[in-house]
Amino acid sequence: AQDIAARRLVAQQIVRPAFKLPAELVAYLGAVQAQNYAACKWAVGLRLAGAAGEASVERAIDGGEVLRIHALRGTWQLVAPADARWLLALVAPRLIAGAATRYRQLGLDAATFRRSRAALAKALRGGAQLTRAELASALAAAGISTAGQRLAHLLQRAELDALVCGAARRGKQFTYALLDDRAPDSRARLDRCEALAELARRYFRSRGPATVDDFKWWSGLAPADARNGLEAVRSKLASTVLDGRTYWFDDDAARKARASKAFLLPAFDEYLIAYRDRGAVLDPQYVKRLNAGGGMLGPCVVLDGRVIGTWKRTLGRETVAIEIDLFAAPAREASHVIEDAVRRYGDFLGLAAILQTLS
Image 1 (cartoon, rainbow, N blue to C red):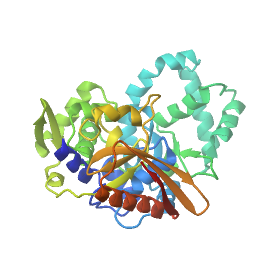
Image 2 (image 1 turned 135 degrees about the vertical axis):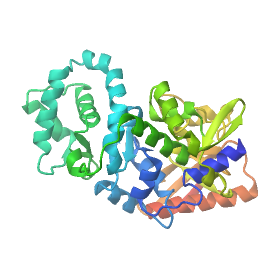
Image 3 (image 1 turned 60 degrees about the vertical axis):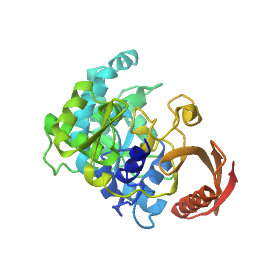
Image 4 (image 1 turned 180 degrees about the vertical axis):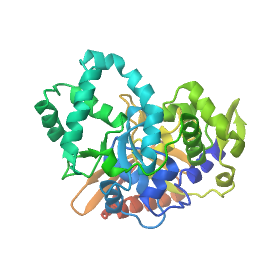
């Protein structure tokens, strides 16, 4: 388990990062969980070589170098523009089928979706970037109700249909734009078999060692599709068996030496959320400290690849106070590397970091 954790740190670019630009990193990872905006910016920043700051990551998202869309498992993800269409074509049919009952409950039928797509396309033409409220007004003007959860499902369906995607923030509000404007379709589409192979290649290269069940969980693919994707690339992967389960990984990344460091990982970080079984990096007795239910997966402190505690921040005008709650009392040497991790997070935000408590 310790070896798996060390290899994942390297594969995920947490240790010895190889990329300086957010777009390069996101393309390598395939997709990055992005339901919490502040968390996903730090998830990218901590994996970049050099001194990347929050502003540079946000500029990449606002400028369309990285897209924020609903994709894997129907949740917000950061993806590379060149990957958006083939990825959506691969995962959208299963997500749309899974939402059929909810669509019926909300009175959303095929005709309503056609009308909503037309209204959204009209509102966003000419490169417009509009907020949810503005798009709700455009839909209402077309005679389409956005009451209750209808708006959320109408917008998400438009994303799955490759019509719209996330755009630049306006103040604190997110906007949407046409996918054609943010990601011109200049790349040939992959057929289904090619897309399965490509997604599997990205996953096991950047998250390995991992099992096929981990890949199935992360991707949201049907079990047979996950197995077929792995089968298409397994000849290029190395593997090991632990406790009767086969773990697949990129052999080149596995040969890199491990490093002893601490990291403050954000909520919903890929180091945890990319795996169905997190036992290699998180002791089962502490699972509820990070995941108390309701789909939440809180920020955590990682030392030598293992989750050793949780953290939270309090933002000030010129400072960020970090409160750390460790599962066990830290050794003296651990305290020093944790302090380094706190300073690094402050540098990312451009704020002086204050370690408020270390308990």
